[in-house]
Image 1 (tube, helix red, strand yellow):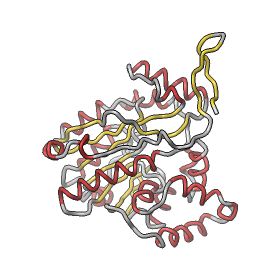
Image 2 (tube, rainbow, N blue to C red):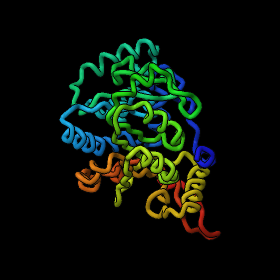
Image 3 (spheres, rainbow, N blue to C red):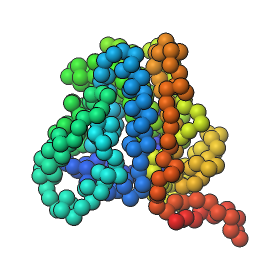
Image 4 (cartoon, rainbow, N blue to C red):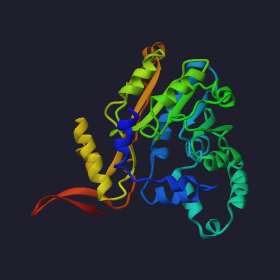
Length: 312
């Protein structure tokens, strides 16, 4: 599966550089320019699922955000903030001019000034040490783990941090990580968690679902709704995604064909929990379709047949 994911990822834009900084300004600038919105459109659904989890146990869950980067999912959940609003904060001329050290200090005070309306406590896992250090340093994460579990073993200290996790979530890392990462995480846990996955439709989920099933978890996929991640960066990324979806037999009409990456919501959890409260009964959805966005790559009929065009 890692080989298949690697092949699919060759069609996607590479953003490694934006995770190498000591603060998230480049992250917000680059992804913001592509109308990145998955933290915002996912948050209402994550909140509904966490509310159901809390109702079932009576306890505030611990969430492990896999591929957490700079802790944006935690920020969007815990505080009345959005990715879009934070992007505008960091785009200000005054904020662009200061050092990372100063920005971290300001952000620590910034987040501390907001009421924490979250339903969960957050820990994070990412391959980027700068991103983890920032997210923990400003208080978005209680603890952070820097590891590439596709290649590395889980350290004793990291396993200790993960042990008490109740919910695992990811909003974009599947495709970069496989069942290898999730197997190591699940092996370190003392209970069977709920796993919230927002997965681009170009990435198959079968191997992950099978891995979860071996650990007593059943997998549900929300039908009738998808979640916009971002616009395609260029025509090559657009056409490559459509080609992959066609190979998988996934109909892109009205979704990716409109110039946007779409993700499915997939929830894996113990069978008794799924029977007691099916996913379809648990969540209501707003997908992001009504949000204003920039120019998108689409197909149009021209004199020479179907062509790629940048639609305003």
